[in-house]
Image 1 (cartoon, rainbow, N blue to C red):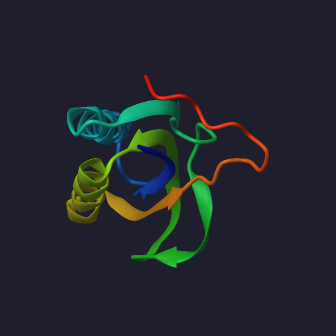
Image 2: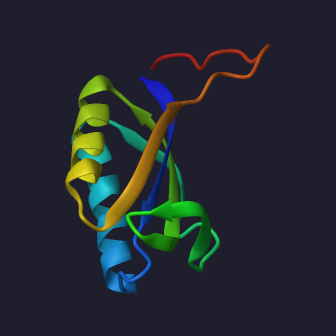
Length: 108
């Protein structure tokens, strides 16, 4: 499995329970599909953050950041779930490249 960073923005008019439910659903999807959550910044900055440009007529949003080890199945399912969620206005999943000179972790 490779390490990925997932960032998504939840619409600003969502209440705290909705944001928490989306976060829990994403983490559950990752683990249910063979992935492992390494770190979560929820919500990133604790407050709504201003967007650089309007997305779906929203100027602010709640940013959530996950760092996780994912396999292909988990990637497909997480992206599908975020695309279908009306509360998520944007998401981005990128692979984290290992640092130059760092030794790869040994498989167990």
